[in-house]
Image (cartoon, rainbow, N blue to C red; front, side, top):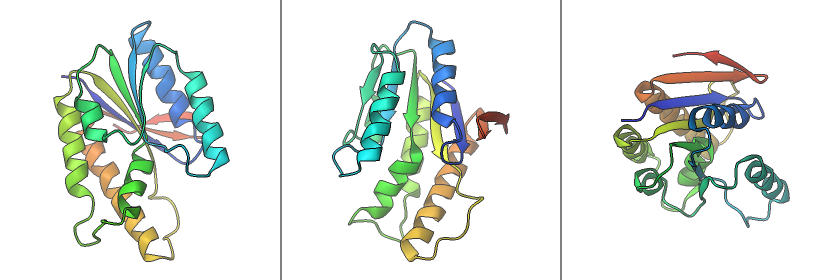
Amino acid sequence: MGSIHLITGGVKSGKSSYALDLALDAAGDSPVRFIATAHRGIGDESLEQRIDRHIAERPSYWTLFEPPADLVESVEQSGSEAMTILDCVTLWIGDLVSAPNYNHSVGTTEKVNKLVAALKASDRSTLIITNEVGSGVAPPTEIGNDYADELGTANRLIADAAEHVTLLVAGQPLRIK
């Protein structure tokens, strides 16, 4: 079975670059499965540029899964990749909370638990990127509070299952677990 390594931190703290460096060191010239959660074509030019920049930073022989690919299926699908990077839980939870069928009383825990089960069952080690929301201010809206609560819960569930947890602060990795 592969290991789970959760990489968390604030916006622009270096999480993706850190994960990329870890994957390049661990996989060498072998392909890596990269599961992206950022959506193209939503009218956000800066996000499009960020996606393009991230793609350019990765080796061309890596396998890319982009939305609307199902996250759990992307983890479970067989392949020859040496490991997986999931970038990022933050946007995935945002998609779930902002979906028309989101139910506040049900939340996203069942979907997160399915993801954790798939990660635990995977033969590939996985680097999971997420944003840390526990150090910020409480959002002033119901959906903002739902989002912060759901992401905090998802991060905690994944961290509990992970062998390693790293917090990035100003580009500096701090080993938590």
